[in-house]
Amino acid sequence: MKWGLKIDVDTYQGMKEGVPRLLEILERYKVKATFFLSFGPDASGLAVFQLLKNPRFWKKALRSQAHRLYGWKTALYGTILPSPLIALSFPSLVRRLVEEGHEVALHAWDHRRWQDSLPKRSEEWIREWFEKGVHAFEELLGQSPHAFGAPGWVMDERSLRIVATLINPLYLSCTRAEEPFIYEGFEILEMPSDLPCIEEVGIDAWKDMLAKAEVDGRRHILPLHAEVEGGRWKDEFEEILKRLVRGGTEFQTLKTFALELRQSPLPKRWPELKMIPGRAFPCLV
Image 1: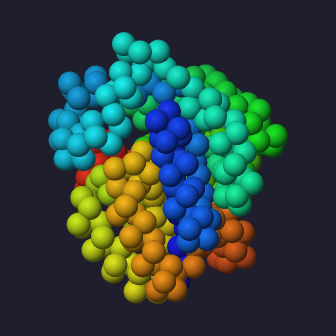
Image 2: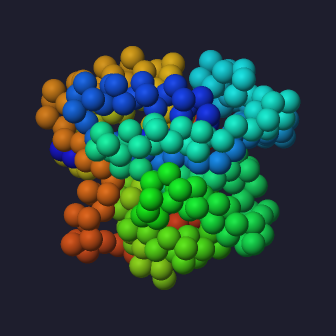
C-alpha cells in the first residue's frame, strides 16, 4: 500500500505554527510528504465577503469551526490587518523542509484571491500571479518549481495553459479525482487528491473513510492542510498516521509517484468544475 500526503499551506499561521508541528509528527514516523506552499500575501480576511454572499461558505465555516482552525488574527489579514507574506517570511523553515527530505511545490502567490475570483480574472492577472509565485519559489529554493497545486482545486484552461508555459511541470495536483490522468491536449500528468479533507466530512467520517481506504489495496493521495492537521486536529492526524505506518502503508512524495507513473499508460481526460460534498466552491473534478 502506497500513499502520498499532499500538505497545502494556505496561511501565515499555517506556515509559522502548522508546518513545524507537522514536521515533528512526520519525523517521529519517518514519513516524507509533499508541501505545497503559498509564498505571497495572506489575505484570508477577504473571506468575510464570501460569508456574506455564499451560503455554502457560511455553512462550511460553521461546520468546521473556522475561527478555531485559523484564529481571529488570520480572519483579519487583508482587511483590518495588513497581509503578511507566507513562505517568504520563513526562508529557514522552507530550507528545513528540503533538508529533512520533503518535497516542496508551488501552491500559490495569493491564495485567497485566486480561489475567490479566478474566473473573473484576466489572463494578464493570471500570468503575473504565476510569475510572482515562480520568482518567490526560485528566490527561496534556488530552482524553478516542478509542480503546482491550485488553491482550492480551482483551475481553468487559461491557467493550465500559462502554467504549462511558465513551469513545464513534471506534474500538477489540481483536481479531486479517483486516479491519475493526463490532461487531454496538454500531455501533462495530473496527480489528484482522491481522499477527503477533515473539514469537508467531519473527523469521525474522515477516520472511517481512511480506514476503508487503508485496506482497498489502491494508491491514495490524502490532502492535508497545515492549519488543520498541524493545528486543531494534529493529535487525530498523528493517531491515523501511526496506525497507517504500523499497518504497513508506505508513504512517498508525489514526485516519486509521478516519476513511477511516467512509465505507465494513463487515461486522457479533460476535467471540469463541479460542486463536491463539503466544499463551498466548485472544484476541478
